[in-house]
Image (cartoon, rainbow, N blue to C red; front, side, top):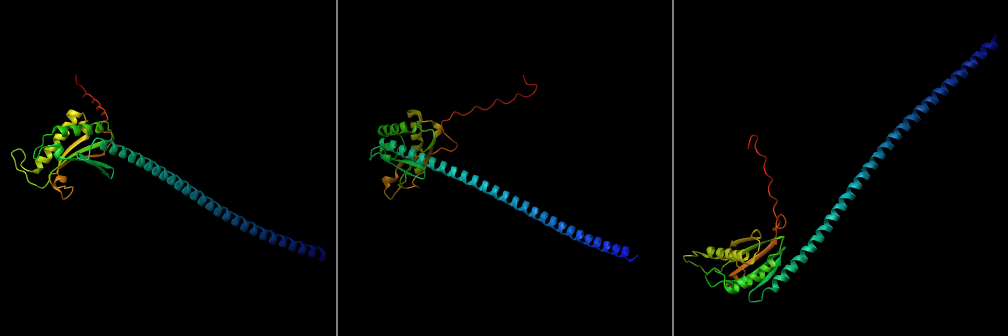
Length: 245
């Protein structure tokens, strides 16, 4: 009778051992599965970080490419603008001799300095015959300009004037500028929307010498908003009110 009992005990021990081993194996499997899940989560996070980094790199690359393109465009436009300005200065200088005036530039602006004694009699604002001839020559350069604005400024020296027609240098300098603008538009044919007249009196001297300060300055600057001789688009006809005939 002892043998079956021993076999039962032995079988129970074997079963218990197997159960323990199976339990340990399950725990190891669970631990391994948990580690695998953690590793998978870390991998996904690393993957998303890499994707985000690549997206940042792509955005930075696109931004850099856009910046380089903008810079290249700016350089190209600057070079073209410099060439246009040089050509404009050369064309204007060809129309003048040293006694009539000179041409200067700076900051994208071209300025023609004309001596008042060439354009006007002393204390007067009516253009002389020689002054009209000079302005006609310059006007041939101004007429084709499509992307420029032309400011005509009248300047006097600091010697005061007081006549019935010109109570002060303000009136004299302004009248001279206006007469130049009228001649350029009415006689030479420069588009009026390109021109502006201003009087500066004696308050913007060019130097210590009075003769140098008595002058007309024609300043050519880039037009704001595109070509000044563009044909404006007519406004759309507004809808007629309901019931109108």
